[in-house]
Image 1: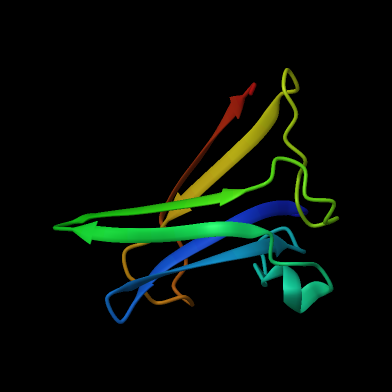
Image 2: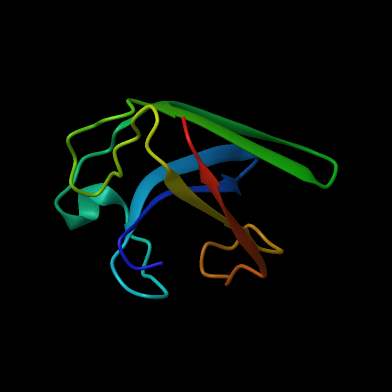
Amino acid sequence: MKDADIVFGMMVDGGALVIDSFSSGDFGPHSADVEQGGTDDLLASGGSRTGSTTTFEWERKLVTGDSRDVPVQRGVSVQVIWAYGPSDNAGMRHGTRGYAQIVP
């Protein structure tokens, strides 16, 4: 996950917390961009939980100018990685993960 542009979401006290993050090492940490000299480029975010399903959504510019954000350009392949864990504990390691290539 080194140099991965991450949007990190968790439920806290019944509400969604969504953070613009960046992985500086092979397995983390996944610190917020602002803690690493970058900027929080999320324009809007939210989330909800219904039963055992949790959903997060966010919006940001495709090209932010932040060195910690991967630019998304039409026709250029981007690798997307995802992961989730069994609890809302931010320190809990994720147990399920995967990746895909997208071409916007």
